[in-house]
Length: 591
View 1 (cartoon, helix red, strand yellow):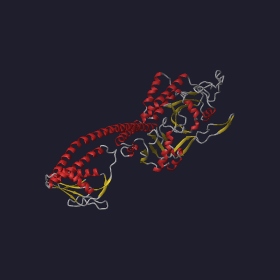
View 2 (cartoon, one colour):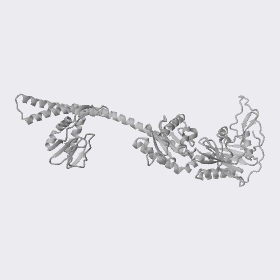
View 3 (tube, rainbow, N blue to C red):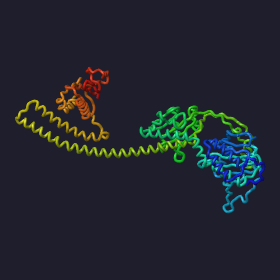
View 4 (cartoon, rainbow, N blue to C red):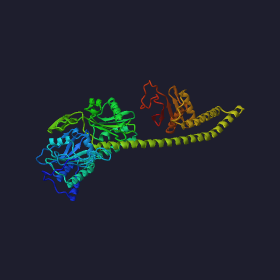
């Protein structure tokens, strides 16, 4: 452990610590509207409590490199705000420790170490566990690092967001100093307020942006629900690009990619989509998204189109990761200000072999970075995840609706089958009576009772109509199964079917003084004879029904696919166009 030493050179910036001042600090932090002013206020408050020379709010980037995001320093010291530091400056083992410690004071970086005795637990024989010990001795690399920065004392506190290390509050002082219990407690209290308020201030900063994203995504879900597919997300007004800020977006749905804005080609998307599915399948339960601002570094083929796409945010909208929504961002050439050369990793020989040493220079070192996009913000990732949940909820709801519709359809089909059976059975009874009495009349005629030719023709027609009506009743059962039974196709003469349809309407044709003219001999066709006959009957019946002329005329013909159709605008044309042409009140209608 590091031994203590008297306080030396404490800045006059330190102010008295009271309950009132702590509440005032919390109020100042909660009053900020954006992240930068929040962090600047936090640095000022911590420096006001501790009186140290420099207080920095150090923020980690996704690649574990860090940046001095805000600071408050003594007036004569150079500013380090905006400078970046590579990940190895604070190794992962150190970052993991700061997730468990709330404060780490170092009164004297050059002071001697006090060894704990015994080093092993007498009961278990295992080394002592010092993870949660704030006074544990620092590593040699850390003390050398501070010495190179001309720092004699430090006080470090973590900033956590959702249990993860967002950043640190790093306090430096040029002379050794003690940190009283009161100062440590107050600084630790403020650091915890900062961690608790961090999400809130980020949400305040991006509240308008968040509301816009949510409104667009809700509108997209509403359209997808009404139009029955995710492809509408690529349609204009609104579209995926109207929510999360991006240069392009794509949706994989119904075995194809739907794109909007600037996106890779279909071939590139197919390969990228397969790679994304493999990445997402391994973490879909714990981390159901993939986000990167340097796609080319993680997926080599993307380096070919880095200018178009360097940033990708993807969420699966199915458990199998088959369907995916992806947002794209282009390459943004950046100039990064490093606090020293990030590639310098001096190694020296130590008692236990080679060891890494901290850099000796912290002069500004600039680097131009290509193949990277603007990073995805946490609010954008959260908006993408909310959209994912809405889409998956829509899919589940749609599946339940389809299941309910299938159940209702099955019940309706059963009821229709029952109706068709009853209707056919009940209607056939009087039909059999009509057929029987017509047969009796024919027998009487054959026995010697004479009938005039017109009566004989009507009687023959009556018999034929009873036979055809019986066929129609049988067809009623087939109609009740439309979509479940196939049509019965056969070769037949269209002219014969037309004559049968005219016979079915003979009474109405005679009564309404209608002329039916066949303009040319009708061909042989292949189809369902009963259905075609009903089509003719319906068309001719409509022509009779919607015609108030004293003499009504119906023209029937056809056009061969190789012939040039005649315009319908010519009322005097004798060529039939389409399946039928009906003359009603001087107007021609195509059916």
